[in-house]
Length: 433
Image (cartoon, rainbow, N blue to C red; front, top):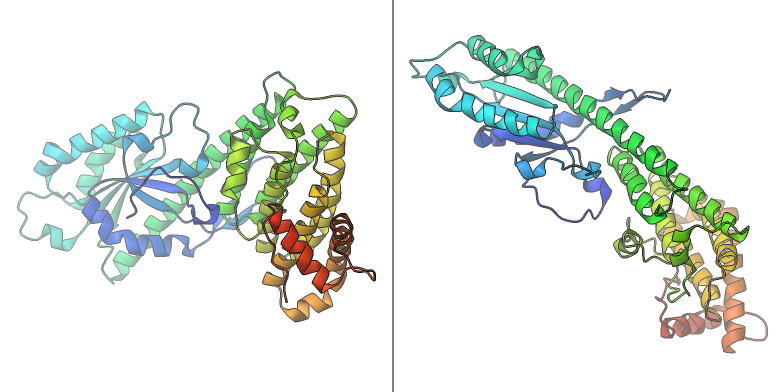
């Protein structure tokens, strides 16, 4: 079982819905491997509100030891660190042991859950023939389960389940284990759907406040990206992509409004002079440096656009739509040039050409990395626009630096210009052979 530590989220595909485990840790540890392997084997139908079509999803979970500090505090909107289900494990079959210690421990556990408003829990009573051997003061399994249901479950009798010898190969054990996995998937999906719906409602409320003083696009961006991370965690890449597309459209509208004379206060930070023109970075699933800048409200327009496009690119690659990356990239590069002009951003001479040139090469290199040569040749029409734009900017930079040959840019000009760009502080791109 993994221990939970507070650490920055590096890459969303590594995250899974969190389930806490209380009670007998040794008991759960013995079942951990089987549980983590078999939980995602059967799909569950995920029905959501607002008329969305149902989907079949495979649920995984990150099982961590129960600690009170893991429970969400007031105002915490981070779904990736939110525990969706709490399980108490016991194999107690001795009435005196139950009265003396197990019952009291369960009461403490439920008290903490109630204190934090956590209503998604399950008690698992594991029956083992080995446990019953040489015991004199034991109750039948059904009696222990009945006692726990009477003491803790009230009208929620389904929140206490019996699990018969899960490590045995008998048909009874396998049937019991299969039933338990179905129960676990059902409760996990119910909690996930309810909490996700609440999160989306809060996000919509925050979006509706965008005309109020003090509203920040960067703050809102982090909230909606959390939703994108959750969809990506469930491998619902299309839904994740929609979140970034909505953020993209929202920011674009604000820039257009600015150009029409309607300026939002928070846009001021995006009007700062351009100090870096390294180009897009698509070699990582997530660029934490740029994400941190957005979170702190210190991102430039190029920082924000570069980060947003890198996330869209990652999701499009997962969706096996690499050619859409090239189309979107060309549109992005042209739009950024216009947005910088609309926002009247001060740009060093040649810096924007440098950014566009490096970005074209980065996109082309990323596409080459996920497509074979046959695919590239068959779909050259999708990349010709980027090559043309890169050549145009190479010529502009070469003219600016006096490096381009009389007959136009060639491979030698390319390498000389790229070296010059590196000398100006831009990251040297991959240029191929």
